[in-house]
Length: 311
Image (cartoon, rainbow, N blue to C red; front, side):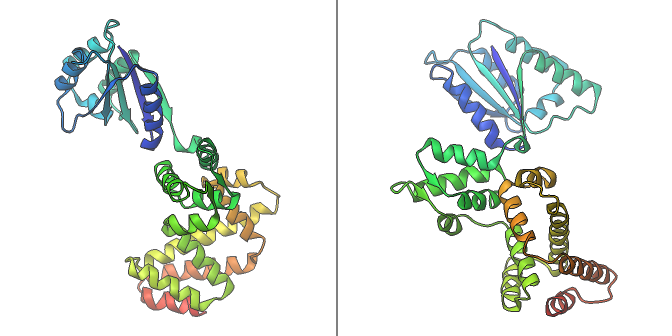
């Protein structure tokens, strides 16, 4: 048998590797198992038997960490099947993190790993903007750099990015051209984008936009105390980028340093040139004091936030 262990923090990465394995095989029967619902001997029996149609089986086991809770005898029986060189079936074990805290679990994992090829796939190792560009290019789509930046900034995981790419491709399947306006229309923006818009409205002293955004936060159930903490994080981010940008740091360096998408780094760098460091610092100090007063019960969180916006 040929066996694989795929460790990943985003199942979209695992899917890509699985698809490449499927494409390398001769029309396999793809089966899914999960030890939360299936017993390990059902998995072993599946791997031991030949398909009715003489096609090799590709068995995908999700939640591979559960294997390490099985008894030594069951793990040994599984590994006996995995080690059978005459068996044309394939096993793929998928998990984000394996719990190897005890010697017993560590020993079982190493035994399974002995008969497997291991892949460690992490989203932080994937450039989302490059991934998006390749995906659009491969299907003959043209997309502007602003649209790519906005798309990646609004996609918090590779899985979300893939879904958004598919949505945009379907929308522009005839023209094969995707603009910033298309992304703005079709891609749902995460709450982080709205907080970012709120900080910009505060710095512009745009009271009307501030309270429009606050109504939106209220509608989706964001409490004032949580919004205060989100604003503190955002102003800290703006402050740090403003300081670092003085050294002519590149967009990709900002993305790496703050562990954010390249698209988000683009907007942070762009706006840092138009914002006063003193005003960012002043707002950060006001928010930190407000957060302290709310937690100490010195002021109601809703009233305190409104007074801050009216300041």
